Length: 197
Picture 1 (cartoon, rainbow, N blue to C red):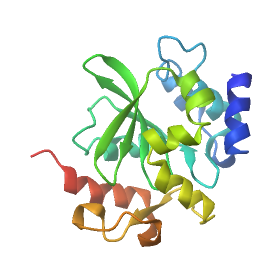
Picture 2: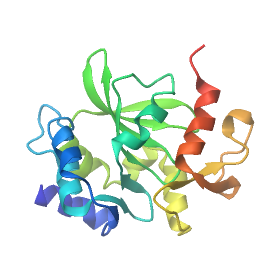
Picture 3: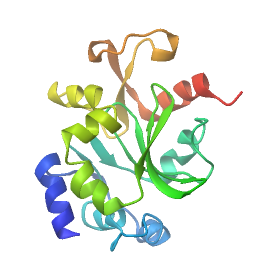
Picture 4: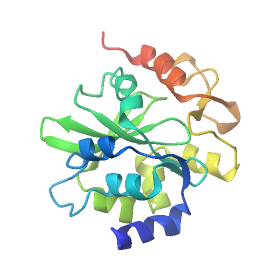
């Protein structure tokens, strides 16, 4: 855990704590966020040591699954088994989700409604993937996310930036067209554009 987290922090910087995580929540998810090759549950370890927290001005925030699971499941590409564990500055989500081949980490782009499978190893996600700008650009909407971070826009833990108007309504995919909104309300609204028909 220490070596993995050290690499993660060298890229992300120190965490900003939002709140503590209860022992009950830690126990509930202790064996959940674990791929077949993971040695420790890095999510619950971060919860124990740093709580629900944010990194690099909201680029990556470790969240309470209970607050967001119902919202992300409204997107058609997300299964009813999905568990949200992190969100980004633009309100996109990182999930532990069940696919026909088994459990995997995925990235939900709430602005396009698309899901990208990232693998099944949390250790690799934190040590190698999330610490690479190329990974962010190629797999996690990084061209938008990294530009948001560079602008140093102040975001509260329950806020994100979203396109106005939404891309589904013809909005342009530029950071200059984004506004600060509440994450949950934004999820509720955008999910309606991609509902199962």
